[in-house]
Image 1 (tube, rainbow, N blue to C red):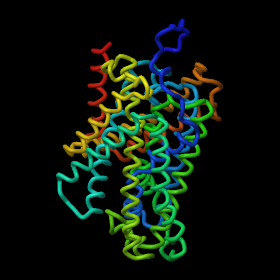
Image 2: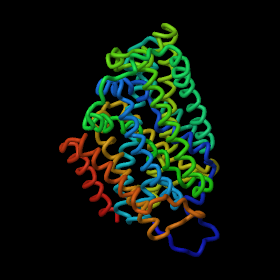
Image 3: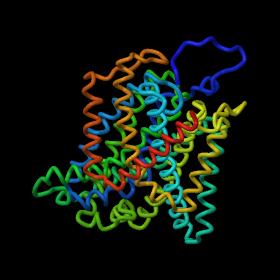
Image 4: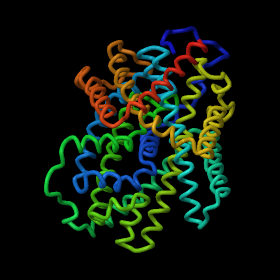
Length: 437
């Protein structure tokens, strides 16, 4: 990727120029919110409560601080680089092709592994709702949901974005109702804790919890289709992450207030169990439907954003050139979308995504480190590709603090074996890069 001024061709346009910039603040914020709030929120309260009990709110606050730092870096980098690829494009523009490619590989790995896992979880949830456990039915549901998401996103980026907006509403309504209705039945004694837990315990829990906040790195991949990115990206990321933090904390408080010490006991559907204590079996079914819709919305979002990494790789000749194709009438990267959905389906059907999810979590945090460094370097060089950029306050303090906090979280929560696995993936990616160049 370069930022040189070149003489335009009368007949040939760069692939990014063929894309339609239709994503505004509302649409991009919905994509980010949808990408971040996935199926995990329906089981997250039990996992956190098992470690900290009623004081779990402290881990959420630490994660909110980490995300505030990271979002600031994403906002500045995204306002300065407006080409497709998201973090891949930001790091490449700031640090060069190889670091950009490695960032893109980590980002793509995280997105594909998550898509495969959620497709499988969606099939299991949908099969439970219709009363079957057939493996054949589950496989058909995986293929159906990914094919539908691909077809919608090939048709138009605006259509895919509208579906994401609708999915955000559909999955947010049951969560908001859970918070609003459940708040009237809280038991105050369930929310108090006799003493503050040790900082090490809070940090350890936050290290697990922070993975539930990841998603912005994937949601910003369609940067080449964002309208007025210098204005849209900062506003959209701030709006979406603020909404995520408020929603997560509210859900945790209500779930704890309804179930108390029983909350950690249900790791499958704690919110559904909490809803059942208020309105009976109908509440449980309602929340299970909400979880299924949430998974569908996530898949629609990842098929909108994830293929843009393949598209960006192909533009840089680091992947088959066919992946950079743009549909002549729909103006969407249709080949990249089809390939992405096919890989995600393969992971979901084989079940290999379980081992990839460990790599996905670590790689997501490493992508955040790369974006923090890129944001500082882009500002130092005053790179701007589309209007006046957003400038984060504090100079180099925010990027440096972001890197320090994330590295501390990784060291505290990730084993050396897992880190070695990520290192192996990056080494293979580097070899591929050298061979392609």
